[in-house]
Length: 193
Image 1 (cartoon, helix red, strand yellow):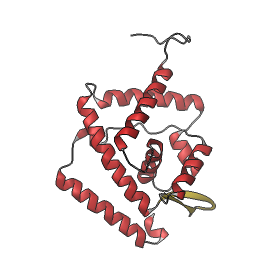
Image 2 (cartoon, rainbow, N blue to C red):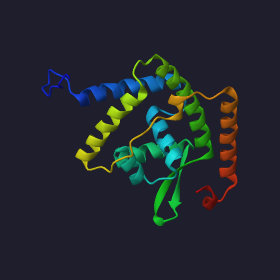
Image 3 (cartoon, rainbow, N blue to C red):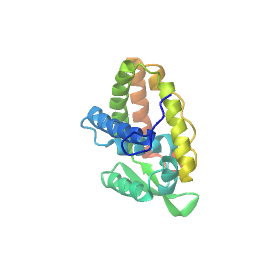
Image 4 (cartoon, rainbow, N blue to C red):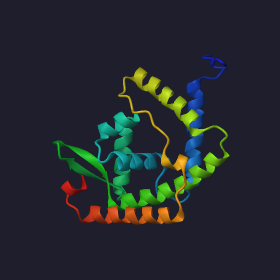
C-alpha cells in the first residue's frame, strides 16, 4: 500500500480529494448544461428536497459548509424564486429554508439531467460505486471528527446506481413530481410538512 507523503513535493489524500472535487464540480457544470443551478446550488436544493425544510445551521451541520456560504447561496436562490424562508413552527425566532414550487420544478429537471449523465459515467467506471463510497464515507467521518462536526449517516447506494427506470417509470415520476408541486401550492403550511 502506497503511503501518502506530507511534504510539499509529494501528495496527500486531502490534496487528491481537493483535485477530485475540482473535477467533479467541472463535470457537473458541463453535464448540467443550461441548468439554472450551479453544482453547489443543486446540492443544497437536493439536500432540502431529501431532508425537508431546514435552518441555515442545520444545513451547515449536514454539509460542513460555513454559515455565511449557506446564507449567501440561500439568498441568491431566494432572489431567483427557487428558495424561500419560512418561520420555524417549532421556534418562531428562527427561519427555515424551503424549496418553492418553482424550485421543486427546477430541481426535478436538473436531477433528470444529472441522473442521465451519472448513469453514463457509471457505465464507464471500472470500480464499483460501493468501493468508492466506502472510502469517501471513511474520509468524511475522519474529517468531521477532527473538526468537531456532527457525523452524517454513511450513504448507501442510490437507486440510480442499481437500476435504470423504464420510460414509463420516468413518466410516472415526472407526473408524480408535478402533482407534488401542485399539492404544495394548494396546501397550507401545516399540510406541507
